[in-house]
Length: 164
Image (cartoon, one colour):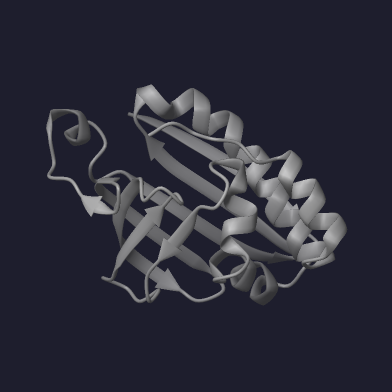
């Protein structure tokens, strides 16, 4: 298991960054860097399950471990999704089940600093290490410029697929 860390500065309020990170319409836009059309299905409450899904229904299921609105969100990843179904934990999944993904927002002069740290299996570290900077650039564009035709066009250039 590896730990990856990413930081970006966004010229927008913590409220705007928070809403863009977890908004129903904006989440799929910034996460297109991982897989176009990705969604997060949850009620966003501590202890609730989150289904991080591709349009094909693949991905992973997790639990919201902690949430302090506009400051901190923490996910504990549990298992894998295939075609919309939660798979039982197997030997491969045991390698990363329990891994954490954390988002910390700090107010700075002129906006927000976002710090992301993720625990990731060695198998996916290189792919996620390459995709996360693009995802955060997508997030920055959305927060600073809004959801416009130009921004959506640029985001499509940053879309990719991270194999599951």
